[in-house]
Length: 77
Image 1 (cartoon, rainbow, N blue to C red):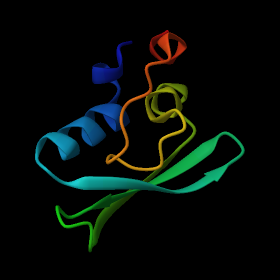
Image 2: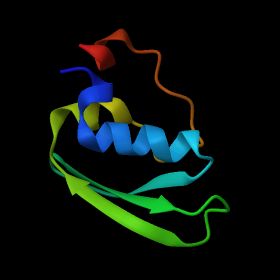
Image 3: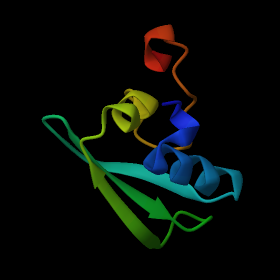
């Protein structure tokens, strides 16, 4: 499955494409919680908690949508 076919990754990509922000608010073991924020980053609209390996790979070490995507080629395997 490609990242774009993953529902969590697709949601974050759409969020970014529309100018909104997301931030990782927790990483516990193999689980991540991502806060989906308004365009100004001031209001949480939704929150996703998942242990999905594709989402974890997409996020890499980034903590927000304001950070560049990792160039690590292992991220896309």
